[in-house]
Image (cartoon, rainbow, N blue to C red; front, side, top):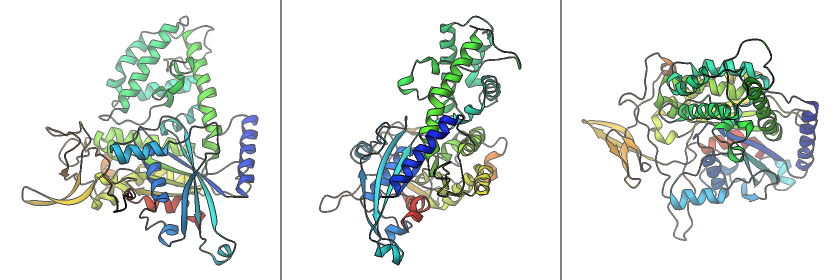
Length: 487
């Protein structure tokens, strides 16, 4: 678990919690963190959640909605003026009008959704309608992987990063950077051009790891691939070095420069994110694109497992009390959700859940030991496909129907974004442990075929009202994350 490192940080965090607690005396609030590694579907999840609650979507497993106790849900001005607002309106227009997926999360953003409901208990019903502020905090999962850096010095991080780069699954991708590093002398005089060149090669290696064909997940520092307004700053112009195990760097050496910038990255990038956003969450959903890792093979699966373990290690899981909500806020419910379940026939959804459960098995045990509730689900926040039957070589197969995104390929076919196809995506293994078997490449043969589909075309009623976005188990996720607060 990551801790705030200074008394000042801890005091500031406690003060923020006190302010939140005072405001909750009027209307309770729940801070829900939504994260996931690149392309896991964070923006889509938040947009679909808000749209279904506002427009009365079909949510049979969301008890407050299914029982008719949900009076209304509506957006309110975001209370934190210093954080960008999640642009729900633009994202929903992109999905409905253009039928393309919104841009990926590249910064922290927030959105306040207020839910009015009738209580399920007689006493609370007599006191009037209940109200809950759901404050949704959206942030890149790659930033979570930076939090362990707070507990590591530059030498330790360099040693671990180099060991990872020399792993068989990464060696070829890192070769350009490793060759340049081998030709560099950490004890030589600091050189800005040298630092920029090494940092650029290191960043290119991280980007290559993230590409679809490799789908590797352990890619800190997270801001290297999402620099935003910090692009080109010295705090993002460093990389690991080949260093001796002992000894302080000579003043004005390349080693000293890189170490100073690494510490600046922790101070000005990582610690503020942890203090101002992450340490104040009540509940968390971690979205996982397990299918991308399965497509890329066992090395990507093992890398994803390590990344998920690192993410959960950063959380502060446990039961919340009035005191802990003021001093050290705990995350008391964590949901791991395997996204894009609509890319599979429903018969494989249980297998997808079993695979994700296997990937987070050890990390979940720790969170439950601390007192947090943890669940695993296979979901599709927006369902882009329908199910059908497909005959292939005289055999009837369970298939999915959908419109592939422009440029998606399958075999020799390349799709234009307008043609609907029927696809048998294959079957996931019955035994989740099969994803680790040496020499197993789930993406190599005809067994599994995952491609990306366009968002669905929504029907409209006779009055011109757009129906709510279709989904798979979004209601189950809502019930686990929020349902108890609406009792």
